[in-house]
Image (cartoon, rainbow, N blue to C red):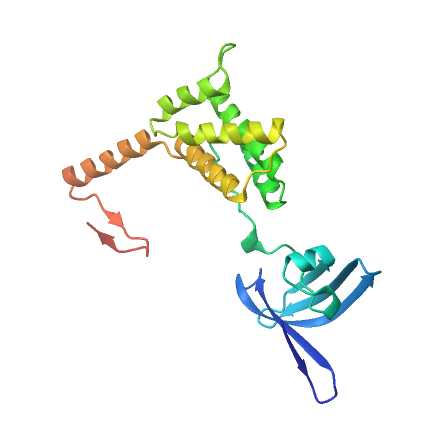
Length: 243
């Protein structure tokens, strides 16, 4: 944050913030602020910034108290305040964007989108429980079920179906969800991110890519190219044929 004093003593505050409009970090100018102490225990403030490039606005919210300030390396008694910043609307580079799986069952895509929403909202326990539920749902959809099958056995059978050797990662998801649900354990963000990526890869494999169909189509195109000299391909600029 940079403060400049103009000739008329008006202070101009600028800051570098990720801009959702420009999709990168840009310089922002403050167009209004408010701050207040609540006794000797809390301090909060608001600043309305506008991007110098695209003119999109963003609200900065600052909050601290003596414990937060001290933990962050500040000094509560010397106006060297350190605390927590939030930005509204939420910065898009801090959020995870969901993928789309049009061939997956609706109930699975709904659970997946709820997981992404929980992740972006900073709800790690709900996110971990949702990821475990998604694996359960995938096993059910692939008819890996039975009264004597717990999730551990279902994962082993699912691994045999995919042939990708991912059972170890899926079992880690099972442990993650169990700990969140039964012990109220908070998972690390990196754990949850990797678990989501593993689930996304699994859904791509099972619902988005029909590898057998694509392989067959590629062979048909290659055979047509070799047997029919009139068969033409077109590049993605449109209009010019090439072999």
